[in-house]
Length: 278
Image 1: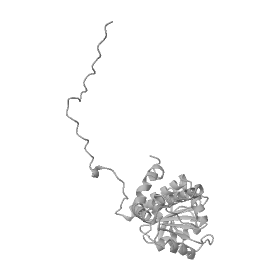
Image 2: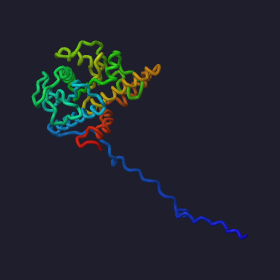
Image 3: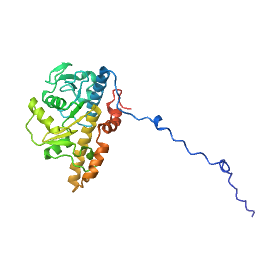
Image 4: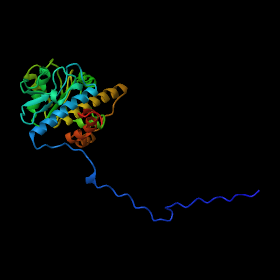
């Protein structure tokens, strides 16, 4: 029986050629990276804030943050700085557009728009805005885990990287005095907030602020998630907090409003932008 000789595989087309050059990195300046926009005209800034405010409400609806008629997100008007845009009383978050928003003065009077405003909620927001000229937006809704943490009268603990953003940068209103109906109660909340980005209102819920609508919304989302993690970890065992030095360093890295703005953009593109999901 004659054996067939083994066939030699054909040579690779690159076997005798010179090594391929390494890929050339794309210059950093050619890589896309979104940053907060700037506007030359106050009218353009107003339109931008209104668009982002309506989008934040729609995102909150997607996340299940709506509870009846409770909850507001407000944004300072760039022209009338003692007036603030907010959602109409009783309108579902998911349906709010920029055209639906109300412009309300510091006394809770609607100066532009055709709907009522939730006076009790706006009382708090107006006083926070007046006490903090640096704040563009304030967010407060009645979320499940935020209220659970508030019922315990506790702050967010540095249990995770994300929670460190609030380390020594949020406060507790350690009393419950009913629904806020006057400026005095609103000022008490504003005083408790001080220079911080967030607040736990005992037996009530969470409140966050930011130098943009995006930042305030992201801090609220993150604070609610941190409350959920904290409650879950405690139910499962004894949580181990991040040490002070590391918590401070992490806060300095992740706790700025610019980082919050950047972190919020995937949610904005998915659910907030007026043209719908991408």
